[in-house]
Length: 504
Image 1 (cartoon, rainbow, N blue to C red):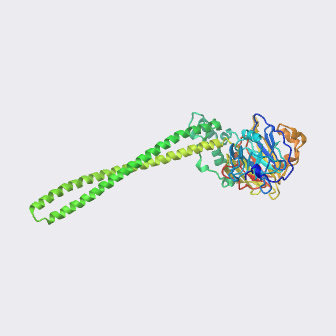
Image 2 (cartoon, rainbow, N blue to C red):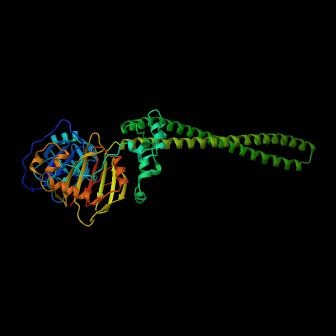
Image 3 (cartoon, rainbow, N blue to C red):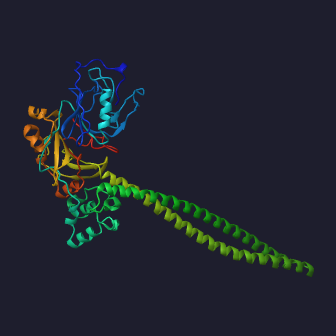
């Protein structure tokens, strides 16, 4: 979908709404959340402390309605032109679906006028483009909803790196910690994800975890004494050397292959000459047998002896060239194998670096009542999915988006916020005191009993295996999220997206 140009604006569908003051802050605190209200035709952006930006919008007109649900920014382009609607300009485009829904600057006539996109004023789009990044969560709801601080034992806790040592036998833990120093052999360190995959995942869920444990990469071998960011930088620094080695071994393989071809050609030429000379000797022998005079016999014998000498030389030469060809072919095979190994090493090193940088990104978890499964993604890539138990599975559970705001210092707990949408409708109104509050803290939950209890009730109904909790906890960083919904994963979810969940 894409917005129309100003000349293509749809007929007025609802009264124009007064412009709202735009609030901004210099530097957002914690992860951002953008909320679009279709009925209010308003965009509001929240950070850790509350509202940071608000603006009117123009969403999809009748027949081109903007879908409601849970999205994230999956592509950004400051100078974008529609590929659906006559190259219409879409400045500061931030895509939330690959099918064409995006936030971008455009005309706001005061009513819903786009072909599905969310138009915002140019100045707001510029500021929004500065604030957001790939992966920023976007919620589109019919009415206005907002995040509130939230706490519940069913939410994920952080599993620190030291958890690895606690899971190993005492002797193994000691040796692992000993080899985990920056100067030690990093390749010998057992990884936390590997340990979680090998020893913590229960037999019941092992077949459900669709991971690549059989192809562990060096990004999973991070020593516990090295931070994720430092380890990602270390792996990235190794890529250029593997690239140079791959190019060198490929060049050597090409040269060795050419040498083998030359050796084969020389051997074939020698064999051809030898066969021709042997045939000539045979003809000379026949000619000698048929000769009638001594002089003729003598001359033919002389030519025959000379030709037999050449034949003997060609026999020796052919044998030598065969040996040289065999050696050249062996060298070519070895060089080709070395090039293949180097190419695979380069690919593995690049993948390890990408995976390590992906582990710096928040993890997203989605639990669908419709499928009865938990899905995990990180950096727009699927990690695994498992079956979970949902109490009263035939009863609606609503749609709730829980966001990890920050890690509580000195603990393994996260501070969370939640946005609740139930059956396509917003959660009950928040208390006035909470609406005015600019700061989110766990204590603030007392100001909004209804949304909190709804979100809590959803968590109360879900049983997640401990091993899966630990696996997710090892990936938890601020900005990570949990989505619970009656809906399944939208078909919009795919390559290069976070979870997209469409609500009624």
